Each structure stands twice: as C-alpha cells, then as structure tokens.
Amino acid sequence: MDSFDVIISPNALSQLNRYIDYIQYTLLNVSAANNVWQDALETRKRLSLVAVNLPVYVDAIYHQLQDYENTFIDEFKITD
Image (cartoon, rainbow, N blue to C red; front, side, top):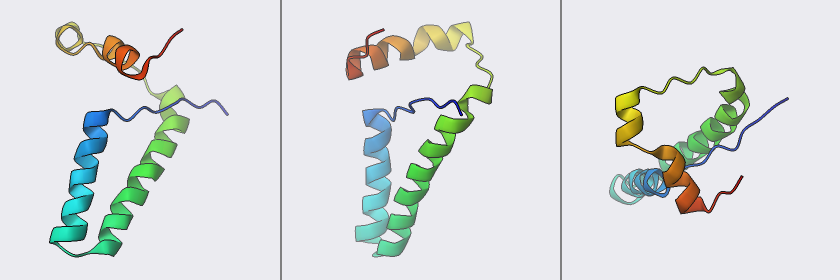
C-alpha cells in the first residue's frame, strides 16, 4: 500500500502542544490531554495512507500567498 510522509509544521506542532498543555495543566485533565495527542498521531498515520486518493487543487491566489513547497523545503532541508 502506498503511503506518504505527513509533515507537521513547527507552527502546527507548537499550537497542538499549547492545546495539550492547556488541557493538562489548566483543566487538570491528563487523560483528555493524552487522548488529544493520541488522536493527532492517529490522524497523521491515517492521512499518510489516504493521501494517495485525495485530489489536490491549488488556487492561484492562495498558492501565491502561501508558498508551502518552498517553506517546507527550506525549513526541513528537503531535497529531490
């Protein structure tokens, strides 16, 4: 079965960590915080498997505003 590497940007990971910290340390619900983390890992795993079946549409205006290809290439030192 084909799969893809799902890259979680540092900004997304930071935001996820803030949510988990809030749940764990402010709401004092360690179990819920762990569930959020496990759900994120499972979602990443499932996306890696289903990505081959998802169509990709790049709208020109968004493509110009958010240059994801070069952002990830530069940030993660990805080479072809």
